[in-house]
Image 1 (spheres, one colour):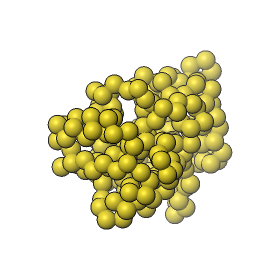
Image 2 (tube, rainbow, N blue to C red; image 1 turned 90 degrees about the vertical axis):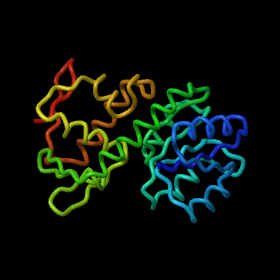
Image 3 (cartoon, rainbow, N blue to C red; image 1 turned 60 degrees about the vertical axis):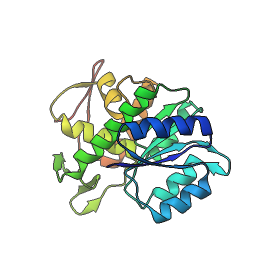
Length: 219
């Protein structure tokens, strides 16, 4: 049974989510503050954490910091729906982000997708792209023995290219892969920023080709 940590200070939202998730077969532990969540994290392990961004004694980012040394998937749940916070969430290691008000079935679908993705990554699998080797079980990438320093979103972007070598990917396809199926979370020009950052970190080890007017390709 998958274990979920829910950190949410709104009692009505929390009770509804706990009930719905338990009906889906998850073991759910609810905390209503950063401090209570930190205490729980120090004593228990979870497969996934759903973190409200605004809490009485801090933010969801504070809880995320406490989870950094633990292999726990993260979904942020918040009323703050601006690009700056979204980018910060993903760069801080979030797996997904959903804004309030939300549709319950959509949240459950995202939870299942996130846990399934983690399960797939848990099976040892190595991918190569250019001079880069990706260890999907550890979610790490190397050039030779050198570990590359990627944010969670940059890693997703690299993995998308590795899984589609030789194929031309449109910007829409890439956005769907690294954000969500509806592409709701980011303006198109943000992808350009992340492609630039990825190119800078990869140097000559991987050639990301721009197909003008269409998208990108990596052979």
